[in-house]
Amino acid sequence: MSALLAPPQATRTTRPWAALAVLMLPVLLISVDNTVLSFALPAITTALGASGGQLLWIVDAYPLMLAGLLVPMGSLGDRIGRRRLLLVGATGFALVSLLAAWAPTPPLLIAARALLGVFGATLMPSTLSLLRNVFTDRAQRRLAIAIWAAGFAAGGALGPIVGGFLLTHFWWGSVFLLNTPLLLVLIPLALWLVPESRDPHPGPVDVPSILLSLVTMLPLVHAIIEVGEHGVSARTFLGVAVGLVAGWAFVRRQRRLTTPMLDVSLFTRATFSGAVCANLLSIMGFSGLLVVVSQFLQLVLGMSPMDAGLVLLPGLVASVIAGLVAVTLVRYIRPGMLIGGSFLLAALGYLLASRVGTDPTAGTIAVAFVVMALGVGLAETLTNDEIVASVPAEKAGAASAVSETAYELGTTLGVAVLGSVLNATYRARVVVPDSMTVDQGHAAGETLAGAVRVAGEVDASTGQTLLDSARAAFDLGMQRSALVGIGVAVAAAAVSFVTLRKATGQDPQE
Image (cartoon, rainbow, N blue to C red; front, side, top):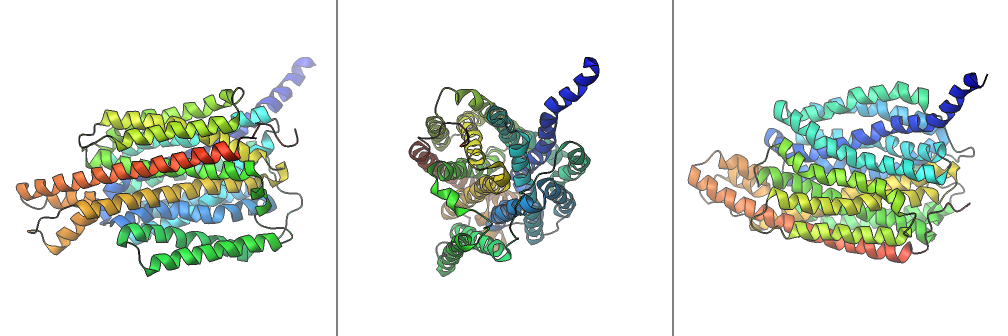
């Protein structure tokens, strides 16, 4: 009889971890998608003729829509069921990936990326909130979240290798075709292994709050990109003003609603708000520098997408390891001290990246990226754990959405801010020879990829002069972007040391 009873016990023991394995699929795919896109930017520039501003929007349209919709989608998952929302998102994400793969122009690719963001917003809060309900034990949940967070870095590590292979053998759109078959596999596995969960007492879906969250995010990020593209203007001030007013209206509305879409009172808790802020800042510098460095390796050092991915692979693997090691370290070091120290380690990595000088090598960039990724990997695991542990299980969707919003907003701001610094520096420093046509001069002055293309259309001497100037300008832009990363990491360390000093690593109810 005991032998007959053993399998059910084993099932009860292993089923949560099987559910975790299923929930890792969307995490891996979305992180692969972001990394692959960074390495595909030079090919997209060449094939579609995208400008520097369009490149930033191609990257940012996806996380921007995520950042605006994650809280509404997390709240919706609490109401209609998190697994149901996950399945809807997986289906839509798979279909829109096909549209992105065959987008014929930059505006249509930007639109496809925005649609991917809409469906991606249904995936990420669902995965983290489902984990919050599947793993009720804090120690097990911390390990599960460490594995979940490591999935982002693992996907980032896999992306350059898979993407490099695809970009070497196929057209740029092939990188989007990774999503469809694996997401279709996710659907039956999720129905089988992942239990449904929802808030037992949900409030109504509030459409005005959803609109206000979007109106807050879109103008602010647009203003940042506009500064890098055209400098400060009346439009940038207008964008900032509209975003801030909408944000104020959003917070005011949440405080007045009986069942708000986002419980803003959570932010009165120093641990919660500090962890959210640190989470945002941790990914801000990381994502921005990844976009810059991936282009630098290909366009300045002349590496193939595959080789460039291999240069960054040790850093991405280091991020995975750091996230898992954090589970052990937090037993002996208070979370606030450990998170703050991890940001100082990341700042050292940015400092190394800013000092590569006029003769950079793949080795120096690889070392800088490893140091930076170690710090970010530690911080990501611990901040996510602090965020989801600070709320009751039935509100896990909303808290997970806040965590994911911080992540995606950090990604958006990182690409927008560091990318704008890069673009502004490049345009100010590149010298375009007078002998070029107006169209050639415009392309060469917009992006380094454009300069590389134009250099192949003119005589060898003029082309080399242009390339030397363009690569030097891009090199300086990367160094300045890394300096911004230092400032972000130091600010994150200060926030962590102050706001998380009382964090104990225990659930509130414990």
